[in-house]
Length: 254
Image (cartoon, rainbow, N blue to C red; front, top):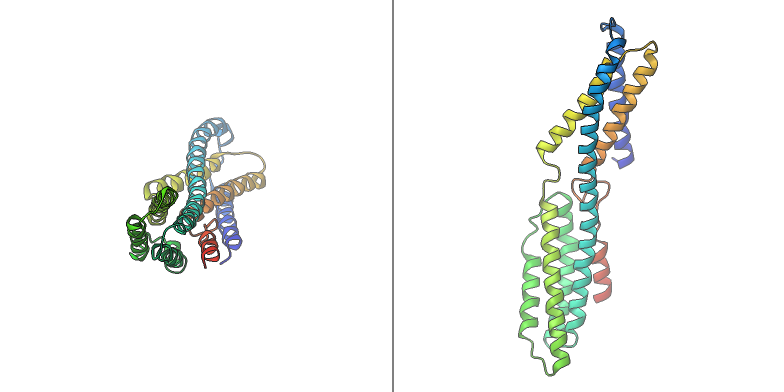
């Protein structure tokens, strides 16, 4: 299902349900003294709604940062892989060809095998990528540098390869993480229910306006929860990070 359609179902579904509940409460509920309770109910709603808004904002900002960090990490990993391969061009054969072939193999593994698993929230992508990195590290470390310039390029290739290793580990950790924990989800859902339930205690002479206010509040909270759900895995959902960086690697090295 398209993300916009799914989001629309979330928002409209929550708004309709909340509106129906508000209608039933106004229709069959106790109305005596409700207006007089608006001030007290409003004070409680301010506290509950404020705390819930802070929690939602904190979670969403953290998830947005995680997606941005995952995208930056993917490009850092891919660019460092290319840099390591280019630095190894200065080394003698067979190191030069071996590092280049292993770089292509690594990028292909990430693109074809690892990324589909990461979209499913699986950080265990197998050992092929690690083996390619280990073979590159071994080839570079065993290469013989004939002069100072080759030695500098050898050091540069090793440094870039270490950056690839760090970025790869961060990527797999992010793909295998739980995103929003069960405890936080419970707090978000419970806070949303309480934030919608408290306005049901409000009263006034215009039931239609009251019902509309409750429905809009429920739809807004549902929209934020939908965004939270979509951002849990930076490699899936609506804001997913794609393997564009590694497609560029193959275009540069092949």
